[in-house]
Image (tube, rainbow, N blue to C red; front, side, top):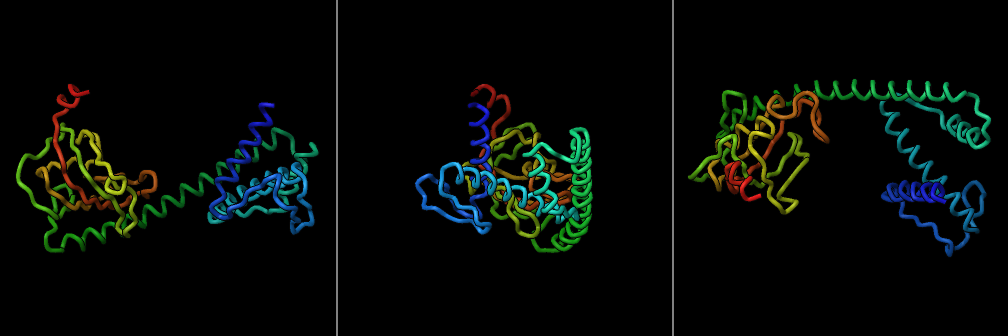
Amino acid sequence: MKKLLQVSLLASAVLVGLSGCKDEKVAETAPAATTESGVELTSFEQKSAYAIGLSMGRYIGSTLEKQQELGVDLDNEVILQGVKDGFSDQGQMSDEEVQGALTAYDERINTLIEAQAEEKAAANQAKGQEFLAENAKRDGVQVTESGLQYEVLTAAEGDKPAAEDVVTVHYTGTLIDGTQFDSSVERGEPASFPLNQVIPGWTEGVQLMPVGAKYKFFIPAELGYGETGAGTIPGNSVLIFEVELLEIAQAEEVVKED
């Protein structure tokens, strides 16, 4: 019973994950339907079986479509034959051969993904250098010794944080093409963190800001996430942050409050 329940939950999870493409629900009370292949969906068992197969097919198809972009094009008919042979336990490969083929497949995909990432990182590096060179010429943009660029959007006077302080800020981060990857403003909640525990561009830049000021930082990749990138941020990306410094607290004060 437990294993059957797990299979049902897995099928449901896959179906929910794919519902962005088609909003379909399989219910026992739904009217009878006939698929393009002529299979009638009249009973609970038929609908359940078809729903599991359809959700699996969409998941596999979506995955293979992404991998085709890497240059790996698998034959759908051979995949279907493998599924059929798996049901009948009459496979043309031993368990060891299956494991070996899947391992080789994973290694090939990972190699292609890494090569693609390196290619994108190289392109990003060239675009980033060109962007920073042109941006540095704009009125109001200042460049530090490290290569960090910044622009004062809202000036203020007062205390500035040290690297060991905890700062509270509102910020929005984008790439040079305008893609937004993070924003405390959109979340509606400012962020607080020790200034020496973030990327170097932040550590250096925010120390230039008095409380109440708002700056725009243009952070070279070497002061950001470098060649590897992070999450949705590709390698060698120049990062643009609009940052408003709301508050400064010394680290020991935060510890005492906690």
